[in-house]
Length: 293
Image 1 (cartoon, rainbow, N blue to C red):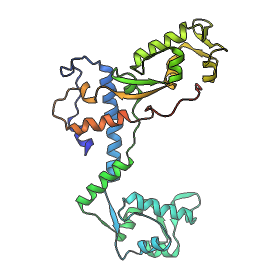
Image 2 (image 1 turned 120 degrees about the vertical axis):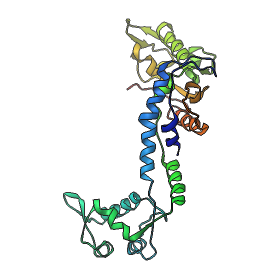
Image 3 (image 1 turned 120 degrees about the horizontal axis):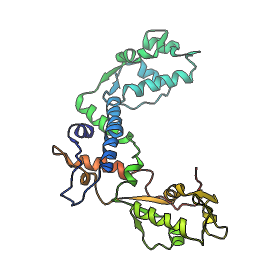
Image 4 (image 1 turned 180 degrees about the vertical axis):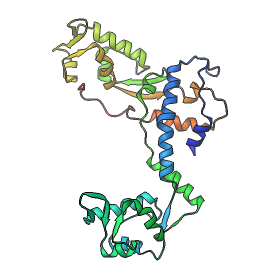
């Protein structure tokens, strides 16, 4: 699994990168390290644990017969939790839970026959289900496990990895770019923020500086229709800019930022870069109006 490779071999070192000829600061390395160790690996470990066991109904299972009779759908191969969820959802639909105690279910006659009990303590479901299922062989478990993780993994990349990385490029909404009289299509964040901050604080056609802290948008400015607010603080300029930009991607891979004490499978780099580059900051449709929260 990817996460095993990351855990065993991904040792970050803050050094000069001879390969690309640049010096990368400790901030971006720290951001990557925190993302991998605090977000990515724990999430993968959780999914690996969740999908580590796979069952199928025995042909003569009375529980399988009950599922078929009551149109309770479950895949041919399933994890224990998927079976538990199906049973408990059906019990809730049939009002079988004991009022005031959501850990105990009073089973109907057919399920009493399936589980050989009248009251079911839901923490005992694993043991109660064992007589109705068989465990798949290891090669089949691995295939199903990998597919389930691929289909269900989702994790949002911390924004500081995006905005603090000098190799990140951003798209500015064309209407804002036109008003600002910018010719560039792609920007790195520092250059774009510096240009936009200067525009908001010095352009008198569109803005009026009320004092050292607050700025107002002039009524005759096209931006008064674009932004759903008239006044803003200087410290909000970066937040405003983030509302009218979209992240395009990086010119450097995660591999460009680190050295390792052991060789790393190239798939690991691609795996981490995928999560960095596929997130809510990716380009979407045109931005219509901005409301600051």
